[in-house]
Length: 263
Image 1 (cartoon, rainbow, N blue to C red):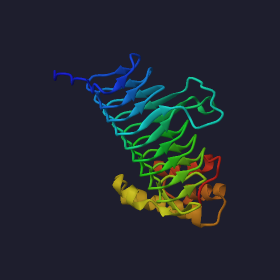
Image 2: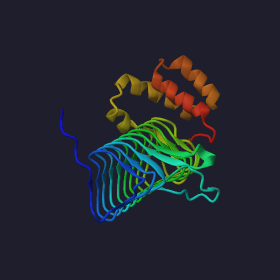
Image 3: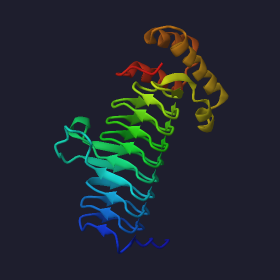
Image 4: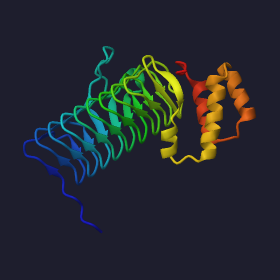
């Protein structure tokens, strides 16, 4: 059995007696880890990082200098309820990122899954859900209650309105302002963001076969370019497009949207 890695805390860091650090955790100089914070094995915390509140961080993460993780929400309704932030494994949280914990109005928890990249100066507000393999480029902002599904991508300086959902493998162009739900597998861009097509590069990178991509192209044309209302478009897709789990993901998403979808 391999030897466990040693936990290393720079003597200039401040770690509360009420914090829990697993094996192999590294903490850089001048970082502050508050009471109630739990950090999983082999997570590396750079210098000048602040971790606070009821924050649980999984294993193999890397948090870079000047990040603020677990602070109270920027929400005037927040009444200091004991909400939390839960972060999974193998995430990269880059310089000056801010991530806030949840509120009573949003289920009490902000959640970040596994294998995400949150680039410098980005903000994740209260009660957001970031699933797995998501990329937030530099200076992107999620308002409260935003969901970003698996493999979605928001390019630099983009912003997403509260309560919006971003579907699986969707791509949001640089500088875009999103005020409605972004359908899975699509690309949107602009102020206010508009649909410009499927995220073909993302679909290719995900390993989807040409047949599955072709199916999505057919469904996209019916949903967004036929002029049909959504219910009629979905009914037509069921007749004209080969059955496919990705088609179901797309149609279920648009039918289930509460804010309406970007078109």
